[in-house]
Length: 304
Image (cartoon, rainbow, N blue to C red; front, side):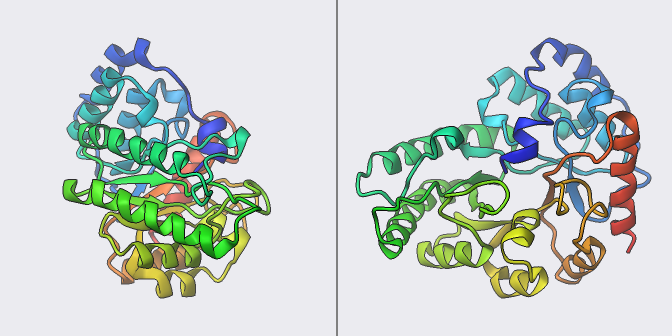
């Protein structure tokens, strides 16, 4: 969730381009080659095409039917409204945004700490995110379960994380929203995080026992931390609420690393997965050649 999509490829403040961008989004849709699954690019996937709204229009013209935006909760209401309108006009589904942004440089929050202040702050963020979700017609929002406290036994931290997730689930579930907890790898990107595998997320979701608490299976992170992707997805399927792709090493489009995404797509199709698949990665090549390679990579796995 952090990594490429937040620090590298997000284009930042598009308020100045909203008027032009909305016009681009209103072009008649051209979806003759729609993808069979809801692959979701993000701002930066098609950076050469213009601002956020223009990128949405371009993505729709290439057959993409979903979009995700980790930073949506930090954007102005005007930007959120413009994005929602562009997606609605193109018949695109909104994927995740981050409901409670961690303080990465400070390794916070610590949701399993003895002091409950950060848990209460987390719950406040969840309450505030409901309006964002409704504005965007989003039914999923990402949460990170924070960092480890080396002074507190792991089992006690787990109990506290389960408790706060159960409370958060009670907040979002009545609105038809589910938080998706994202396990992150510690070997390449995020040392010190609490939730490190999909299996661990499954245990917390089971403990929270709420339709508002599910797991985000980011296969880039899971491949680094554990591997064994399809058996893990199968074992944890009842609690998986969202999926993200990204190849390893490099965190770029499918086909640039070791993960057999064509096989994973076939498995997801057999499972009749109808949710969004976030393209939470960068492009292996710069500029338009990279954008064209991105589209071609998803065509290959979609046709597998």
